[in-house]
Length: 82
Image (cartoon, rainbow, N blue to C red):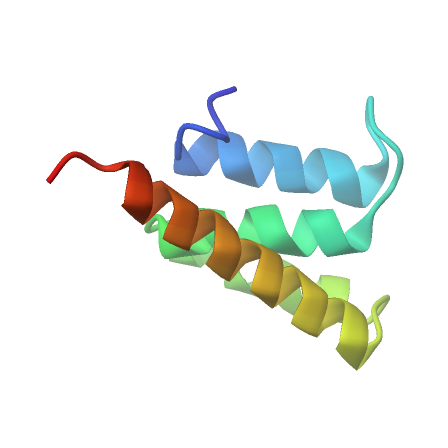
């Protein structure tokens, strides 16, 4: 829930869980998305993880991850009070 609420540390942790298949099915697309969101939330020290994930992903998968992160961010912006 914390990852969905925008907590960057939780987003990183969820991304690692997807990358490693810890408690969830291994899914590099979801891992890349959540770690991208953690980086967007200020945790730039995790940028290297994206490079490592890309080694296991096609260009289409990376693009899917980026779209997922952008969608999540846009939905979050819509929910913010004006």
